[in-house]
Image (cartoon, rainbow, N blue to C red; front, top):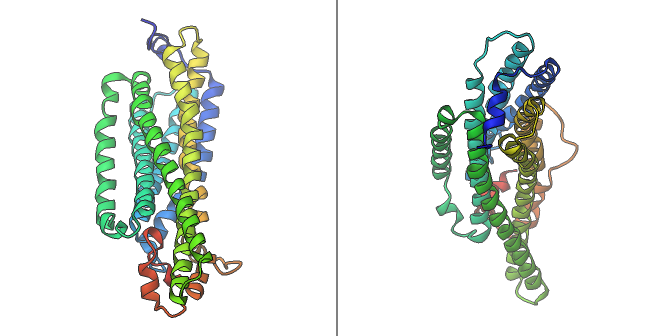
Length: 341
């Protein structure tokens, strides 16, 4: 049977020294890239300097950033040490530690992305019920459950080995998440377009001043949700850009019976590094696009903002004839405390 045979035959063939040094060097770079961004995201949500970040959506972001932070603080340094020792032909780091951490953190990361997508769908599809359906407590319980599943699922690796388990991982966790995320996100964008068109049409119809104000508020809320959906979409695109070539490489590892051991070693390291790279770029893709996070980052880094954050204009547009507490109640999801910005 050709499946898994060639890669396993190459397990006893050492990789070229140049590849080991390349992987070790890139691991150092990923450490420096991954830790600062994800640490800032975690710090912003935990410290919450302006009391507007402790929402269900952001608790899922905290779980994602925490997972990515572990990648930068544990996985990347371990990868550097292992591949450096590999180049020096010193057996000091057990590869199984690196592999099990890789699968646990990757599984937790992709399941959290699925949870984030579902959170946005509920916020868009049922904005009135969102606060009762998706609470901070439920978000935390869901995040803990994701970690339990990631831990339990990943330990099958010890039974099957890296190549075989990576094939199962690609065909279960990755592809199922791909399908769910694409289907749900298309639904989110469709709902947002419909809602935006509805409130624009309502503004064109003559009505009372209070109705006009309500239409303006609902249109602003829709724009806010669109901004969150776009930030999430960029993260999902990065996820696809990382895991798609990684899955292609996993298939080659399992089915390429004519591949040389040199190519097998390159495929192993590259698919590993591509997935690690995704953890490094995530916070720069979503956190800096969300005004509340930017404001918290400016405070922590003692930087001066170049201008007022756009969301501060909400209080001026929404606040006509309404107290801030009432305005805040109209904003679902991560924007429920936007009036405090």
